[in-house]
Figure 1 (tube, protein in one colour):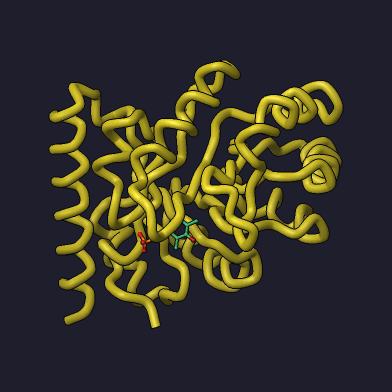
Figure 2 (cartoon, protein in one colour):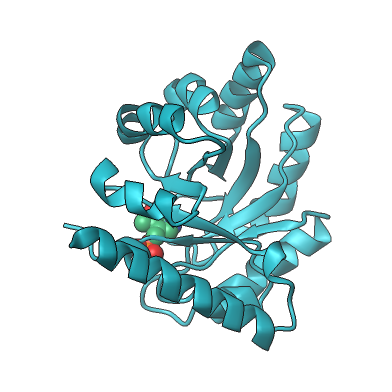
Length: 223
Ligand SMILES: *Cc1c(COP(=O)(O)O)cnc(C)c1O
């Protein structure tokens, strides 16, 4: 049964997070597992909720909007995180639906988010995404622009950015990208670090990740 497969994936991810925390002499309570359920339907998500997982990540607003409200109505205390790029014209829906947004990366989006946060009286946890590999196809603020961007978020838009997020280039060792993200966070006084996916979350935890975004190791491969 596919639900058994799913619960097994979650169990081994939990065990690996615990081991990585032990190796890094970190308290496991300081690492939030964001179970990335993009492309998977309620039948795959339900067993993971039943196994006690409460924090989920989606990369598209429309998909999340179709999928999560019924699940949230059915289950208490779920937390939904947006981990993919956000268009400014979807800021309203994103603020309404998500408890955290990991992909704040440009002034126009800051402006739209600030407006909606004020209007809706809701403040999702915000992470600024850093394009640590300076990849042209990838979203995120360039590392050399990060300090200015964070100042602007605060001073121009009145946004509280609580942490940084990065997605290392596929073809490079992730360690230096995690380290760079941690360094930028530290010098800007930010406590949260969203980094680490199925293939590299142990390394991310060793470098201080507070939020690991894990999909395929829990749910299996995506189509
Ligand atoms: C899909 C996705 C993940 C999860 O990736 P896996 O390799 O399946 O764990 C994490 N972060 C972001 C931004 C994603 O889009």
